[in-house]
Image (cartoon, rainbow, N blue to C red; front, top):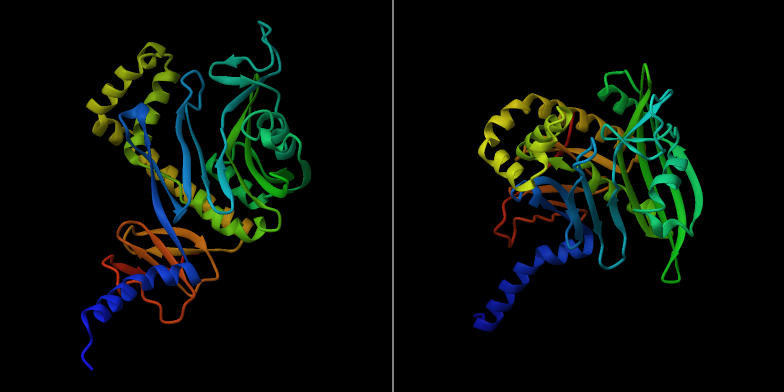
Length: 356
């Protein structure tokens, strides 16, 4: 029997919906999120992978009076369950054993916060994050903590072996809307002695939260969001240029944000070339640190992206992993599933990286 126009239309609609149905039933999709920086002419500052359908709030925030002059303050969350990744503020500290002119604790000393070293993640989180970024944990219960020596070793290597590094995870239990929740706060601290005291600071900090009982299962997915953060060369060069101005005490050069943006725009290629080697070195270091996180957390696998020519950390346990030219990733357990069927997007299957 010859098919009618209606049956042909139904078949086309079914074919077009196969990818969506497969994703909903037995797959996981990541999309590339671009974070722009209004303070630097709206250029793309960083990119990262986020689960499809999740929302992002926040972005780049500048702190011109401090040595860490820009922070990624971003929360990526699932609108259905509330599970979220939150990037926490980072900053540098100074501890002076002898001060010629007494200064109060918490003062800004040459761009660093004047404070004695806090050597462990748990008291650091309690002192510096619970009053501010993580105030929702103030009424919660500290449920445990763990050292992450592999991460600490990778970060120490990035510092050239001159610093002591401590990395840890702190778990809290708290209540939200009458339901029990859990949150893991990850903090990496680096300490470098110098003749007058200690320079120390937060190398990185973020948290994962989810309804109680779901956090451990979701941790590999949430860690993918963190481990895929990549600054762009143009933004990184501009950031390092601003840092250089700050370190040279050229405060007048960064007082006017408009003038700064114009200067960066006019000299963007020269600035990029100035810091190109530093950018590539930083990216190699971040890749090593990301691998150490995946080993500490487990439940993730390293794949080779044939389009970008680089490695990417994604949740393990999926039969097939695909990538598109747009930087989207699709993980599926459905036998015979091919995202190229009924989709105009070109997908390539990814293989586990041999260099893991």
